[in-house]
Image 1 (cartoon, rainbow, N blue to C red):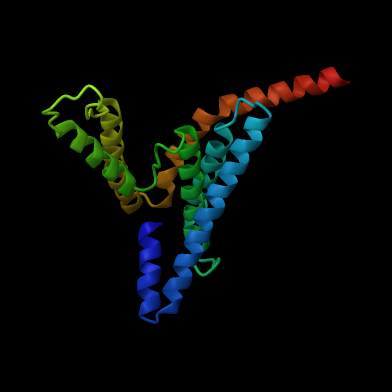
Image 2: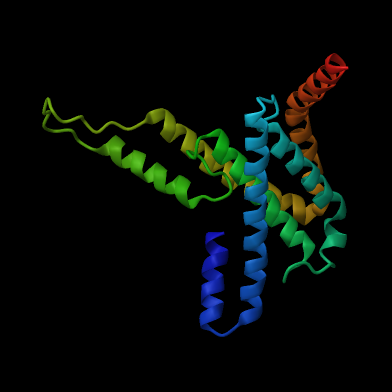
Length: 207
């Protein structure tokens, strides 16, 4: 989204309004996806459901499956200033980024790398800082090594995922996302199924 907003500003300054509207379509799709994720998480949390985070992941899986099977057709259909395929991807990114933000309590945002690399730099700065003078009333500068490891792994897997995604799309096409969608379904289906069984039992008990 950072690049899209920057591009929108650049094109607006150049008087090129069509790319500005295209960026707006993607931005709004991302925003709606994040909002939907928050609604589902908060709905589940208030009702103490098992699928608090599984519902957005399951929706993401279904949408990825649609992208894999119907992406080529959707790319020919105009949405809000961009094709439905692009809007679908924006929605999925917002959905996924919001649920990870909720799970990690805003510590991790997986769809962009800027914040991750910034935090890696901060932890590296702490790691290399020389606490030359020890003062009893001043806490020494200490790096959070576990956080540094996590952030570094996220950056590496972000890059690896980007390479695999590009190769998959190059050689297989849209359908490359289908295995990922199936994996997400397997991860999310159990807590959703538990909530369905609990709902059925509650209905039977109320009769």
